[in-house]
Length: 370
Ligand code: NAD
Image (cartoon, rainbow, N blue to C red; front, top):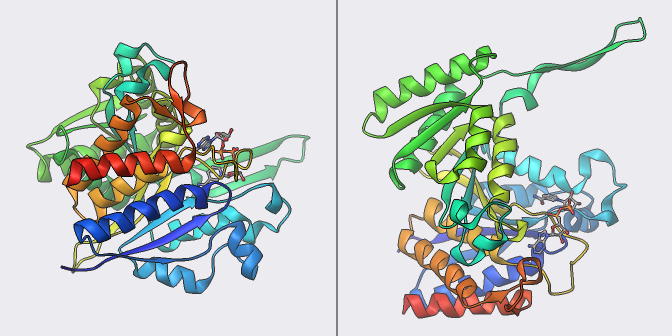
């Protein structure tokens, strides 16, 4: 069996605590299911800065580039608030995204039935929710030029950001959306603002063309991004895959995330282009949350976002669909049994620590796997 090379970057704060639970799971899988994961580990963020004065070293970047997938914990914390801008902890993550050319950000919003009551929406609106938001990550208004503030000399200033997309950028993100929709319910909703933005007109045209030429057997729906935001909180279960640009994706994925409760539950993936020879994509998997310095070292961190990020890694980088399904089911079962870390605790449930939650998910996964 081919080896599966994973590069682990635990980072700072609760990153290493959450990563420890995934490490336990990987070693159980290697011992019992012969999964052949080969792991190596590096430093990123404040941990890397403390060690060698950079947010990620060239040597660790090389390892990230040659791995089949990178698992990333979290970076940052007050200890590094005053380090210079180019070596601040977040610079490590930005370099990984840039050098690996990770243009597609995937954020699932899944509402486990046991947590439906923790959502700010009515349980029937969110229970069983399973949608995937795909955000274009390397283009659009966050990067377009000109990007400047000019002094107009009359006591006024003018700030300009530029929304810019080329055809190829829209084509490749559209393909990611349809390729993933094929493995789900087969429906893609594309969101833009073609009524007021020419970039939205092009976005709409290109998505429609790629759909017609390459994915006509799947369903495509177009929605204006503002209406999409409304529909997300009105009846989110109408969606399967949503594809949108960098700016709208940033906002819509946060809205969708909060439908499901805590930050400690949310995984994500960032994917690059497929290798022309092997078809494999560069990929980085990380929880949505940060390093949570307020609870770091207390054993209170919820490791589910990190564990669910590993489930995404198995699904999208290694085509281990059954194992990914089983791991997600294990998480759901553990919640069903009433185990909760502090962030998702509610009356009548059993409060557990980071490692107790990790152990419970692994035990449940074992039960479903053997
Ligand atoms: P945060 O996500 O770290 O924490 C926000 C709140 O959610 C805190 O109260 C925290 O305790 C709680 N929380 C987060 N993850 C949790 C988990 N797994 N289990 C239980 N509770 C959890 O965001 P923040 O406080 O704004 O930022 C803290 C640091 O993290 C900053 O230095 C920030 O720059 C950095 N950050 C890093 C990333 C990343 O590495 N991708 C993302 C966001 C923030």
